[in-house]
Image (cartoon, rainbow, N blue to C red):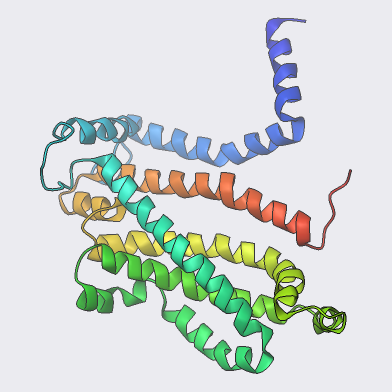
Length: 286
């Protein structure tokens, strides 16, 4: 047995053959895109003003940091400066909106879904709010709050809250009332009904709603930063496009994709899988 075979067997034991196969198949589309992108830079199929070479995009990340003043300097935020500041600005807005919007949407959605008359009354409002939530509010938000973090936070909260509120309310309505009546018959309180019936029964769908809400919210945030923001990745992309610095535009798009891909792959997807295994309609073999 040679060294390559030993390494291959060790990797398979460490990660598992099925997992390695999944990683390999999932990486194929990205490998094709990167190869086509590299060939475009080498062959010149499209001019750099449309699709810049990979090397220029990679170099722009370090250039944005090198153009910045030293740490501790008191300067106004420059759109060519502080890539890390733009990233942290977008992430902080997402985290703040999630901390406020997710618990509020879930709690109010469960409370509304527990009463069928109330949920039927609020259902048209939820559909209406979801149809206009997100980027449709940007013009009004700019008029109300001006350009800045208030506008972007308002857009993000609108998207996350209404989608999760409507999803939670509809999920609770699907839980059979037989379980609620059983808990009440045995002397359980309304809190026991929420804790032991509605929350576990609707939790798999609620987690899926969280995954969707953060995905739509992330897209809405980038759009809001482009139009009504003063910092963030969306603001950086819009500012770079205005000056035809396409390598920085591509860099911003790639960073946005990588951040959400990592969040969805390593946080939201495992949480959804664990919730379905814990409370869903499937079982995990022993």
